[in-house]
Amino acid sequence: MNLIRPNEKRAKTAILMIWIVLALEIVSFFSSYLQYDLLKSFSSGSAVSNSEISVNDLRERLIAILYFGAYLISCITFIRWFRRAYFNLHLKTDYLSSSDNWVALSWFIPFICLYKPYQIMKEMYTKTNEILFEETNQANAVTTSYLGWWWGLWITSNIIGQVVFRTTLNSDSIDSLTNGTIASMIGNVIGLPLALITVKVIKDYANIEQLLTEVQGDEIIVSTENTAIDPGF
Image 1 (tube, rainbow, N blue to C red):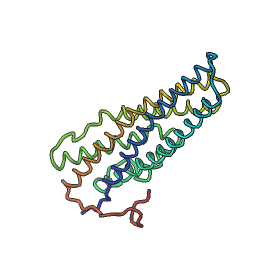
Image 2: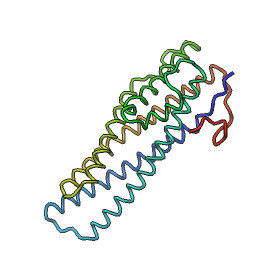
Image 3: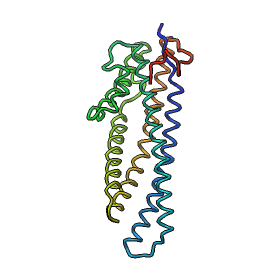
Image 4: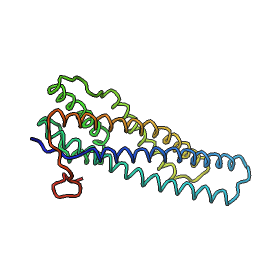
């Protein structure tokens, strides 16, 4: 009898952090819009006081720090859930393309990070559907049709993030700073459906992961967090 590791708590934590990032996307969008309005006023020759500039810069820095911290934690919690889910699936089949360690590493290796995490996620959905069909004759317990949208939004969001970073880093004029602000707002807008669809990805797989445990009668280790037998990250 397989002893799978609990993953429900990791799923809930990952989802919570995504909701926090989504809220900060909205806050960041409105903050960027205020900066855009300020830049347009300045470029049109309207009077802009030093205090307005200082307040804008302070607000933007604070939101950027909060967003970066939440985004980083969200990425970590998502990958921890993702890796644990793949680890558990390894206990139920011998026919998976990667190791659970590779699940985490695939996000950080150049070029491979553009496709490998998506392939692993799709494999998790597909293989779990196959096992459930064999055990319960239940076909397509969850669909993979929206995984392409999820990954496309993720790639697009990261490309825009790079544009914002490079534009802001090299901003030596009002025009370049304005363009960077516009790109930041576009990134925030894309971040909203990305957050929503990522929550769906986690919830859907968490549901079939639980169903798979029930139909196979597996035992779950009560808790392995922060212990020697926990499979690492």
